Length: 210
Length: 210
Image (cartoon, rainbow over all chains, first blue to last red; front, side, top):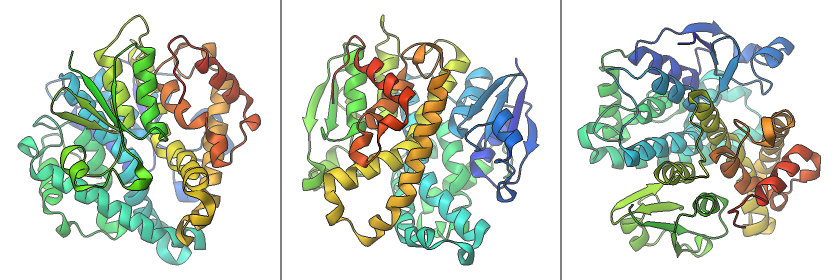
């Protein structure tokens, strides 16, 4: 198997997903750290060698292949290193349902909850632009709708996992920013099934904390 | 194979992706139409029977299974009905690269380009709220960055397709809102490789227009 190098910033939940996937599958992962706030993913060297788009995470596979997009990197690792802890369902419909939650995460969860966490806890509310400030209410509403949808699904989900009664990439990708949603101003006590599911994942064999 | 029913609004690019995937694979798809602007996806009946989240598209597989999220629905159809026109690469890394562009589409393309198209050409700029209006500049910048990233990738992409030198779901999912980006105020003349790629896809055997 090709060696894996993760280009990441440890404050990023998108980067953490990949470390969590690798940890659950006992896959070795070399880490290269960058500080987003110091502009370390916008240097000419980073843009030339890691990503012309200036974003992390990027999963480097072997010497040459560079794979951006956190959920795609998790999928690559889970497919490449299937083991006793298989994170992708064998069933066709369940596999699509896993992807459904992963796309939901990128389209309706991360853009609201991760962004609010970044703005409020990492940049700091006082340092936001007027344009960012004007989006807080909309992102609060979008994040609440996403957590409510997850909570309703988990209330009746088999085994308390998102898909097929067992841990899959859907849980891992949604966990990354959900379990730190309080840093974006969301109180998980409002969504008890989400809270129970977070505890269940954190107790899973092979779990690694953010 | 289970019958497929697409719950959709024909103005939605997310719904169109699924019709395009089915058309390219010659898979029969029954259509059920709803008008988002008339609130037809928020009725008690829709919320109870199609999606508690009130969103479309939803792909109904057989009698019971309901699959939201456009890119997951495309993936389901392509996996279930692989044929002479295989839209998912057999190679592990290329499969991850296909997913990379599909996640990019939902996280950085659709949220900017599709939203501006919806606001400017469907709702109409005069009918926007102050909150929506304040986001136009940011979404314009995000959409431009996404199109520039695509253009640079296509400039050196094998065969002029996003992944592996042939048509995959990455192309289909990105095409849906790119080819109507002018309705969101983007002039594709600025991104000539994107324009060439749009024409190439529209000329592909099995193509169906939006």
